[in-house]
Length: 182
Image 1 (cartoon, rainbow, N blue to C red):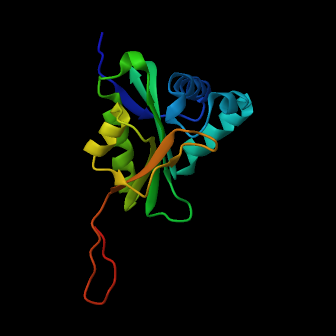
Image 2: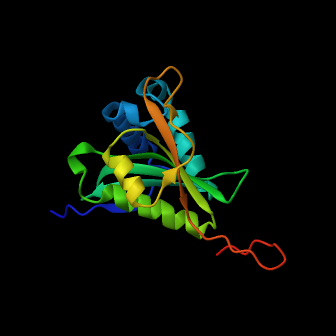
């Protein structure tokens, strides 16, 4: 048995797998996401199907699944900001507890970073629960820096979330003041 994770984009017809992973993530790590299990469980199958189909087919979204031996064990979702194409986001990052420490989180992150760079984004933003955690350590090792001060994770929450940003390209200005970013 090969315990090395593989990462690939979700296909639009795999909404049941996406739904299962997302609900598992929210149940396993309720303090890691802005949404809640209760809110997402109320979504209809049509909502799940539409969400994945529109994301998988948009060109501005990258829904990813991590697999070990064909078993879905994690997910992440990259998105280019529709109003600012220089800004990308990482959402829904999660790896199943029994498959952590195999590198799937790093691989999911690397895939979103490479995709965002290929889309010419200058920055990749994410939100993380503000505490010492494997997720926070992963993002800091990757070069993410805090973007502002911690704020409530969701309305009414005592937990704090922190927005973080990774600079994806250096800004280069020519003598005329034009941006020639690399």
